[in-house]
Image (cartoon, rainbow, N blue to C red; front, side, top):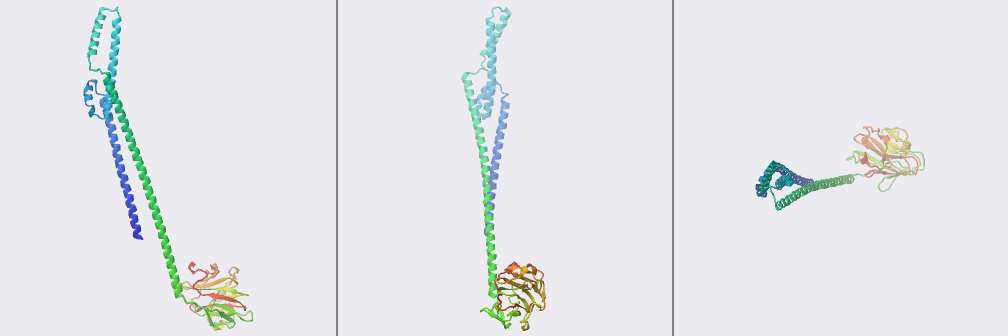
Length: 401
């Protein structure tokens, strides 16, 4: 069982490590992708700055090198060139308008005509210079190129956004998977612990049951001794456990002792305990432990030194001395009462109907009498009847002590 637990634990740890490794690889890929995007952005900004320094005269060379430029570089160069060409066309239109106005004015001086001719010559030269001119076809081609590059740039941004969304989704899935793995592992371990606890409880119960069976197997049954019994008492039954008062004269105590002393079955429980059940009762009944003697079969045993007893009116007797009557502990027909002693502590205890009586907490047996103690019972009225139980199964659970 322990080896299976260790194997299961190692398998779970390996799964957790695999998940952590995958997570680390994903984080490295994400970091590399972000660095790549940052480098592209830096390169684009640098190309935009460099493009502003280009002149219109470099247009031919730039056009030839477009195929070697990146998307962001082409956009920057084309935008700069279109701006320069638009400014040149604006200047050209302004000069042409001015010349037309001077040609329509007939009252001008000769100097004005001279200057006008000079300016017109200069404008004519400028019109003949093709450096800054661009055809409508070229302008359309450049515009289409810009639109295409802008669309490509937008597509790249969309693709990058999708990649980031995919990374985020993978991180969520990995986190959820990790949580599910932890929960499944925790549930499995909890179930295994509960199963193990249940198994241990069953084993413990089986061990206790085996111990009880072994004790019962080795148990020696005690019984009432017909040789140490008053003549007016009759021992009834095949097991000699029932005592009946058959006399005709009332108000006389009659007693009987058990065959074996309280040392019988001392091991392994270290307890001596027995119970009596009241079958019929007219007045007082008393039972307990006392020194076994023929002279004690008639008369009161409770006043004898060495007597420890429990009387039906609720009074406890310790070494021949009464400790006071307690109606709460009195017993009658239908009740089952018991008396016991612990050999190690010498402490006495009393029970009624399976319940321990708290009043017996400070009652102890004198060490000089313990080895010679025998169970006894005394009946006062004729027709009184009790049945003894010397074990091993009692109404009171000795395991609760």
